[in-house]
Length: 149
Image 1 (tube, rainbow, N blue to C red):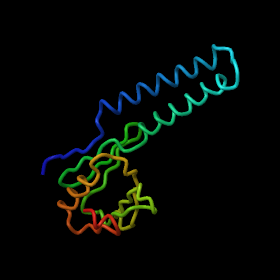
Image 2 (image 1 turned 45 degrees about the vertical axis):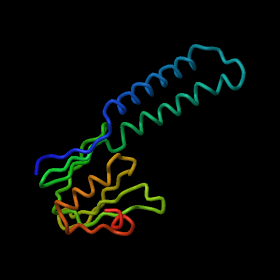
Image 3 (image 1 turned 180 degrees about the vertical axis):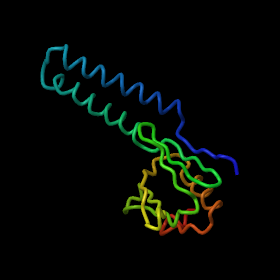
Image 4 (image 1 turned 90 degrees about the vertical axis):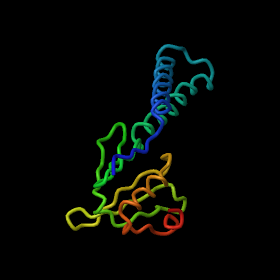
């Protein structure tokens, strides 16, 4: 099997980072330069900086791509190092919590069961999980995830 990659649209990801950075810059500029006139205009730059920083951090620290090879799965975030799990070491996958917004991958590392959790806001995550299941059919999909795959 060749490499198969599932990822966010790079244009959308970097455009969001660019606009968020511009909004943070403008908010800091407004806080430092403009004189406060009324409560609303005093609070507004802080709100802009907070919302833009949230957007930038979400884009930097959430899952950006899943790469499948015949021997491993690579989970990559923009601002963090990639995380690799050998396919034969994956034991099970399941949703976390009632909202099912997180996915937990349980795998064996040196005969100890460990977990890697990531946000399901990733596009085509079910397609990626289906491909993982095709490569390694003995992976157990627990609960509602087993019904969807």
